[in-house]
Image (spheres, rainbow, N blue to C red):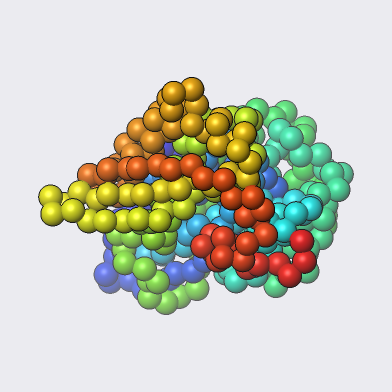
Length: 314
C-alpha cells in the first residue's frame, strides 16, 4: 500500500466521531482496491472479474479522532439473474444505511452520457445522504475527460466534493480519508480501535480462496462459482483445520477447477492457505473439495450464507 497508514488510536483529550461510508459504483470501478487503500491493508478481495464483491464487506480504520467504517458494496449494474438482483439490492442497501456515500467512477471507462452512469447519478440525487464523487484511475485518463465527467455528474447530483485519485497507487487517498473523517457524526467508536474488518474468520477464509480461484481460472470459470467454509477445527497445537467446498454449476467446471492430475486445485489451495495464515495470524491446514450443485443460484440458503437477501423473483 502506498497511502499513509492512519493513526491507530485517537487523542484521549478530544471528542471522537464514528460512522459508515458506503463505497458504491459500477462493477470494476475499483471499490475493493480503494477500500484496501483506505484501511491500509487488504480486507477485500480484488480480481479482474466483474462483480467479484457479493456481500457488504466492512473495512475499519482510524483517521485522527474519527473511526471510519467503510462498506464495500457489490457493483451496481442492470440485474438479469436472481443473484444479480440480490447483489444490486445489497449495494443500494449499503448506501441507504450510510452516513456518507462515495460514488467510485472508473475514469478510463465511463462516458459522461453512459446510461448506467446517469441512472446511478439520478438515484443518488434523490438520496438524503451526503455524497462524494471519486474519480478513480485519473493517472490513466486525459484531463479533459476528467473535467467532463466531474461536470456532468455534478449537474445531475449535488456532490459535497469531487476527488481525483488512483486507488491502485494510493494517490489522493489520504485527502479523501481526511474529508470523510470530517463528515462523521460525533460519538464513540463503533468497533475496537485495532479492528480492521467486520467479517467472520470463516467468511474471510472463503473470500480469500474465492479470490485465488478467480485469479487462477481467469475467464474459464463463471463468477457464479462460490466457496463455503464448512469445517473449522482448532487443533491442540494452535493450528486450524479448514475444510472448504468450491461449488460449481456443471461437471465440466469441476474438471477445470481440479485441473490435470489435480494440479490446479493444489496451486489454488497453497496460495489460499498462505494468505489465510497471514490474514488471520494462524497456522492453517486447508482442505479443498469441489462439488457440483446445479442451480445453486436459486437456493435461499446460499444467499443467507453470503449475507444477501433472497429475491422473490428470478
